[in-house]
Image (cartoon, rainbow, N blue to C red; front, side):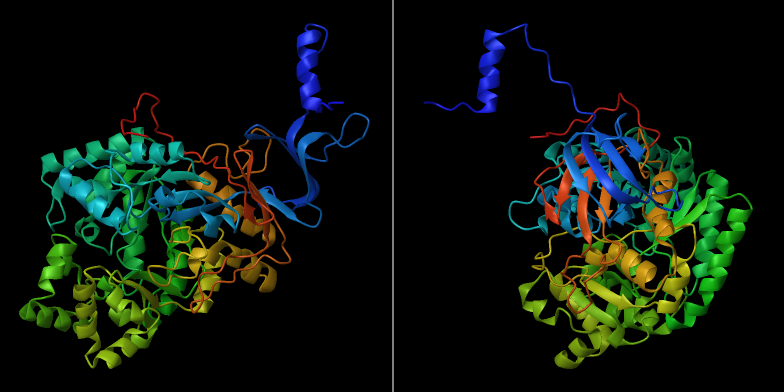
Length: 579
């Protein structure tokens, strides 16, 4: 006797009794999260309750029962008893963009509850000439054989390419003032002519109409550093027309920290738009006392009605290139121009003299580190140099029998790359002060990668632990801020700042980006010595109503979307090949 499955029997009945069967009544929810402690992202006290999700939206939050008092039915029911249920977290400074071309999972952030990655400091568009395309392709080539090549011309096309490929997180992006500048002026230290500035403004408008959140830049790095304040105001005014924001790695986070904040305030006032500073800090021991004045400057501007905010990572070290030990003029004309200068003995003597002179005209990370023991080499391109990964500059200089500054220049030349470097610059006391400011959100300033992705060297632990560290160390263990306040700073605050519509709150009608975590166990595991370790304590993550993390394991679902800024025009077309 043949036994039919229920599905098979239903199919036969549908043919034999057509018109006699009613369609099944749809369940009230696709997903029902029960008995959790709800942190809704607003900063309000948590409460025990349920979350009902249908399709890509939260449709109900509270004590959800049927008219008879029974538990509603759903396709998937998760018992979150003892767990916190919160809106998905937002990484406000992510460098995951190109990594998503290679790996769609975004695991190091996903394991911390991050559901949205905002790209900033630089952008992957516009690309309006062959020089820009070659520059991007050189960056993409570092991912190894089979890496993508640049086939897009606008930022919107890049974002759409990622979405159509299939990715885990939601993504959003600012347009880089540096990229706009390079498209028109190249990488030279020049001031734009009036007609060139008009071209640059047009590129900002194009990006804003394509969905950029605003304008971003990083003013310690060439060629961005060659832009004066007036140029930045002119570009920011274009972003302001579309409701955008200006967000910046300031010219100085050390010796001229106060001047950097004052420039930011000026740009916001004159361009008439909200502003935000990246990775709030005071770099260098001699500058640690300046953090109180920096906080006071921002609070004063806010009290006067200016929309100014900040974000941060929760560590005492930063991460950038070894090239940041050298004055920006070295790379006037681009990295290859600087690479050639560093092979000229006369130029090297001049550069070394300027680094040792410790002028305040540029951000001298060699000096701000205070010691070569506070400069750790983290990533090389050349296999012959990878033996130095994890060693301090002082150690490598001693091994090679050379002066530390000579070693800096030698390594850049030999690697023909910026050389990934970790600089210990900040104080733990200041990190705590920054976390306590109600206008500070959080960004990793890193890519989201796999635990085993150590082929290019070491990495900064913020890559794997920045967000869990907030909730574990600084909320649960040190009680610097409440858990409801931390959740607000990870979700509701950045969603409002960056105008991510219907995101950042657990609220009916909002998109179902949800994280379920254990407040008692959530913790970062990554250290500077062993950074490739996932955080623990996040059990389930939903993005746009789809479960992407189940008991800490990726589900193989990729529901991430490109999120667009308020200036997005529906008729802006994407032209790239999406195969």
